[in-house]
Length: 343
Ligand SMILES: Nc1ncnc2c1ncn2[C@@H]1O[C@H](COP(=O)(O)OP(=O)(O)O)[C@@H](O)[C@H]1O
Ligand SMILES: [Mg+2]
Image 1 (cartoon, helix red, strand yellow):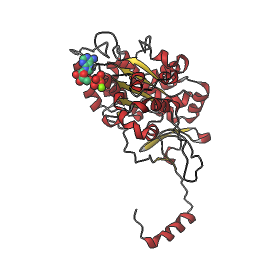
Image 2: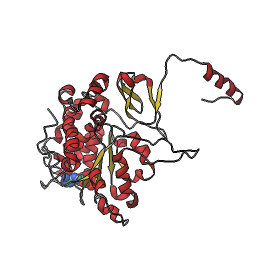
Image 3: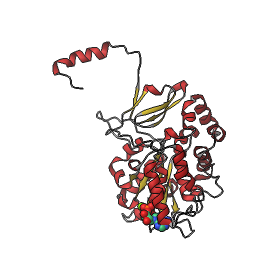
Image 4: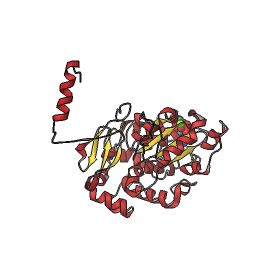
């Protein structure tokens, strides 16, 4: 909007005197927002879901071209992505982390991350793509390299949504540990505002998946830093090699080899951006504010409420994250005994 200098006073007068019937709240982060007694609203860069959703606008720092996209159909996603996760512990785990992310708020769960590690091309990035397909496409993926200067902005853009960080080795080894810690702990640095008083600390809830050829401890070691126990707990390492001689995969679903299967998944990822809005059950999660509150207070009872399908399984992981801790969840067989994610 361009306003002639002489119009400034008139604009100010208009703003002071106007009494709009409708009001909107502006936020700089996506994800769940407390809408008071009415329940909760899930804000996305270009829309909001839930009670009084129209009244929320997202205005992210630095502008937010939405990386959440919907492409293809839910059925296509189930067939080309979800079905191929069956029998593949790392892929099923990745997709479950993506679905668990929006549930943290409802269950009071803690943020945190998991790191796929292997020194060869085992399909680590492919697993991250599979998780990304829950929310969007190519643009949804992030790299560690981009976090060095923008960690708070990135966290705010992934609050209550999965954050996928590839190539840990490309980040500054001096900063990597701190970044993992901050992401998981859910708050930014305390900074002084213009007046010298402490500004409000930015806060988020983020579940992240990371990948790289080295682990956090090793990477920090390059800068002479020692990983603290708290850091390993907040970013639990998962060996990318699933031990079946197929890299990150265990079941190739009829494909000739791991490379062909990885290619098929990458192509499917390009075709079927899933988008949280398309999730069966997500509307139900966001739509019934009373339930949201009930769940948050009463813990997870979402299995029956959410219904079958990929979303329905995520409560399993949320419970596991909470009860068993990240270390257990990320143990050698991260989803041992897990139910099929595709019914
Ligand atoms: N499990 C696998 N077995 C054999 N080759 C694979 C496997 N996963 C990936 N690849 C090959 O490596 C390439 C890179 O895949 P990517 O998922 O980026 O692996 P990473 O991130 O572990 O390096 C693929 O295009 C494919 O050719
Ligand atoms: Mg890779």
